[in-house]
Image (cartoon, rainbow, N blue to C red; front, side, top):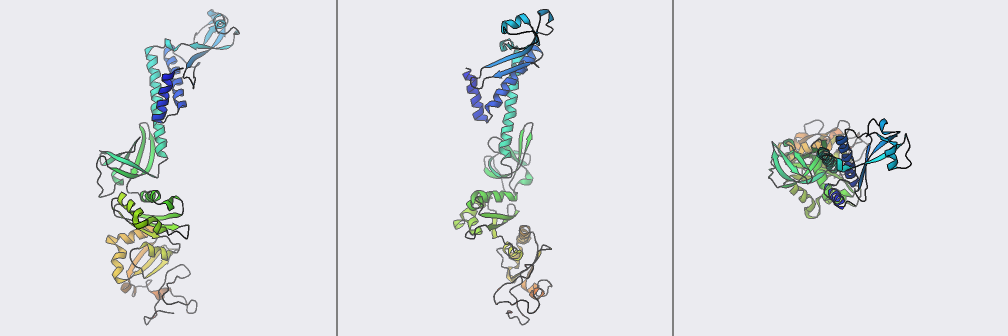
Length: 392
């Protein structure tokens, strides 16, 4: 038993994650390569290694011929007399396995065998690493800032390095060597030098993955993130939905005393996060998406994917947001083109007036204090008559 070799194989399996079978096959192939370098050919050479003891044997399959005079190539043929010494049952025309002594291999052949083993181990190690991180594609991993490469940053993920390109960095974030941070794996590509892993800090799915890791209800499928809109480093809006009427999706994501969302905000270095309830009714969804602004009325057109929104005069700037950010994110979140006007502006603007969306007289009765939608799901209330009194 070759105990030292077995121990070395076991160490490679533990440290590199390379299977024993791959290592055994690499050694067998290296022995065949050594034969080729030593004898000049190896088409008929076979190497077999015992998986339990690590003992090996190398033999050549030779054709038995009548006499030594007929032997044209002693790597391919053997005389009957010599064959009888190996097997008394040998006869002319048989294929006989003749053991070769690896001790006869020269220094060059031995070095070639060693190189074959090392090359196979390196290839297999790259494959193991590639498969490990390919499984994490479209998910988050934690890494350490290692060094700056041009305008990008090399992130050490443990067994491999990832590249955080300048375009995937959050404006305003500053990275220092040794910083630990979570990144989203965009893609993993196999290259001759090993896997190339591209990661991002700006991708909206980074926020989704952070919530999936932080919120148990999302991992269990009770709460779903239906939509995400993000302007990295500044603000993110997410719309959530609960499959259980007893579970508040917004509350689940916020956590007790805001603990869950606070952990995510800290990871994103203070990026603001608005969590709103998803609603199948377009008007409700648009209204929710404009949070924290108060909305008076929403006139949504599901076919055109447009929505006209009326807000109180003092809420217009809040609804639009700084440089239009709140309205822009709401539009991304809902998929609707949103036009926002204040109440005073809406009075004289067609399409923003309540009376533009009223049913014909007698088709619907309105109750005081309620909001209404037409047959297309358009939000049209509360409704006031010409004298300014709320219509009954």
